[in-house]
Image (cartoon, rainbow, N blue to C red; front, side, top):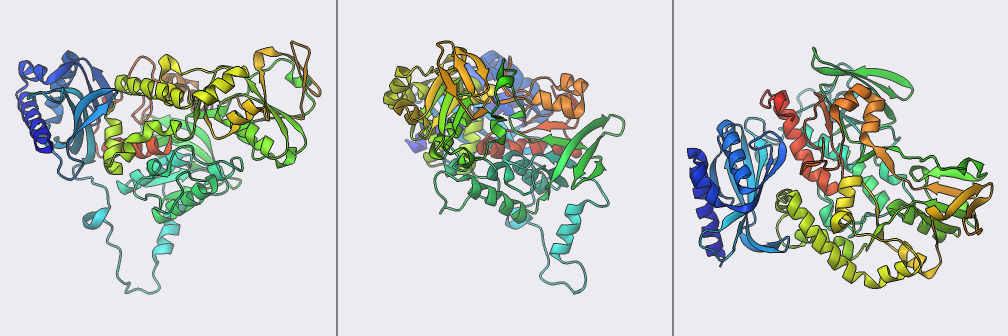
Length: 586
């Protein structure tokens, strides 16, 4: 079966290359199923884009192949072999292949169907840039930096002296300034540094990893360790399946040290403007009380999916005499033992804070503003990561993940959501009984598409849902609150929910708000919406060149940042090397 599968893939690749090289639409069109999808990640288009429908796929391939000149399509013997799989409820042959273009070495994934046909057609096709010719990453046995076995000048600068000098940027500016030192910033800086681009990360926290370290006491990651590795430096095999926040924070410090990343803590990015003539930014930083002007050619915003805390105007809340705080300021519940708290918002943060308060001896009531998707953290919430348990390497799983177009992803998650609901039926029935409002996400696509479209609106149950059903954490609906008074909230029924603390777990404003604050409304309007899908099949202004020259965005989970930091860095390197046309920032 394996030999037969490989032969069919090879036959398809040969026919595909011949038709593409000849520019022969009539020969290319029969190679694709009518409901086919082509996702290109920089390889042919210098963009991340998806085209659907056989005719559109073929027209796009023919148009872009004239520039890229792709050739050498063949199964990659260094990666997972072709195999029958089920994706989005359909059987297919999935194969990883390699090829080259005029400017790069590339990988791809093709899914062929039907599996039992002598000449199956492509259902999905991914073409992705792996490296730029002449600008390869500086790692591995053949390309790692030389270093020195010894130094003849014993009083000259040693490695530590050189690192200290490099990180200070006393006499120069970085080519790339990365704003934010979480997983997004670290991943981007690591990739950029490997491509030889001087990069500086700035973060306002006092210590590397504080963006995780300072979160509430009990926090652990909600997906498993094998999905969450950072580029180049995987977590040790001794680590627990679910990583505690402080362990991850410590790893961030080790990561920066090990990969020799330039990182300024206690540094606030004050914003700035772009000099079109000079082709660089002019920005200001405040570090330890003093200001510094810098002129990087590129800025990578790595401040998360969301930017500024969203603090809604809640009528009569100003009458409340207790403490009001946004969830971003909450750390732990020790100070609230024996007290009463209202947590407004029923996403992950709201639930986790309510549970932490209850564990600290406070009485917490969760106030639900809108319907929420709930899924048990294990095993139900882990269903989308099943690929990483199938056997292929991390790199292969990342490529296969990138090969899933939006339409198929939605179909897969609709099925996974229904399966999770069956697995979690007892819990969900209990929540319904107490009046908790549930949903399945947009078109039933589940929690992951809620994250990709709005950055929240779901809860991974790590115990708070059980506490709600048991009555140990209270539940109220925001619509039932008539007014706030000095000592709590009065419901329309006349019941009073007494409180000493109100936590607003109300999420964050979109990144466009932060862009307007830092760079001005004109830049924000020029860039447009960030994150979410809009009318297209790709996240808006994420991981790609934006309409504002020199401004880039990266955000998401550790896995997303690991996968797409590579492509973001390749684009910036291509710009610096004069390979990527400015017009490609569609």
